[in-house]
Amino acid sequence: MKIKDLPLPTEEFLLCETTGKLTRSYRLNGFDCPVVTLEDNLAKRQAGYTLIDLDLDDVKGWLSHAYEIFGPKEIIHDSQHKLITKYVLSSENKSLSIVKALWFSSIVVYAKCFTQAEGRGVKLERDMLSEPMRECHDKIMNYRHTIVAHAGITTLETAPLEIVLSPKSIKGGILLKNNCKRVEFSDDRNEIITFSDLVNAVHEDVKIKRKKITKKIMDRTRSTSPKELYKNARDR
Image: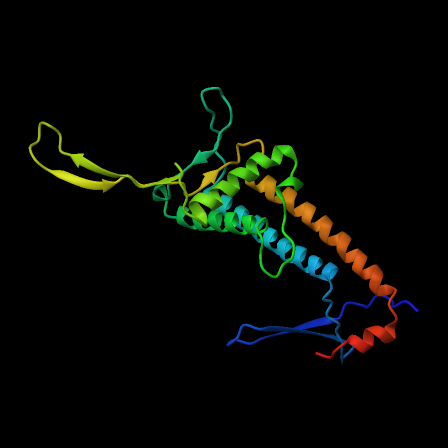
């Protein structure tokens, strides 16, 4: 006998403030629902894609908020009249420090989805991206490797020490000064493919992968006998 789909139960959450452990329980018509934790490879892959799904959802929200604070996009062209990315300094506007924090967070968490995370069992690969998307992906990963999560040899973040001399008409005086150059935010909304476009495309692909795996697990579970499921279940 196949198990029918369960009506949506109510969920209850209990957070331990000292350990951070979160316990979730389910109730239906006033009764506790037994729970079976799946630990096979397919279930672990589904869990990994679920976490990536949540990460990308965060990135989309942060980018949207960053652009909202930064304001409407400004149309800028280069000498060949091509639309270009606008780089800005956070000193131009105090609110840009928040934009920088949101942008850096977006880069870190996006890149996290493409790097091996202990316990997840899955990660995204560059090969999954269409050719037009890869250039934008490489740019974001370069930001991650050089100015956000790591320090690299790059023109995006430099601080050469310079001696500033007084004008020749004014006698004496020197000043040691670091000529700091750091990319703190790039408004790429004029680009053919933006960071937001990239994240949206990756997110849709992840949701498809997650949906397919979830269906496989659900089909397999429906064919399992109720007796076997209840045998492995535990009350919460």
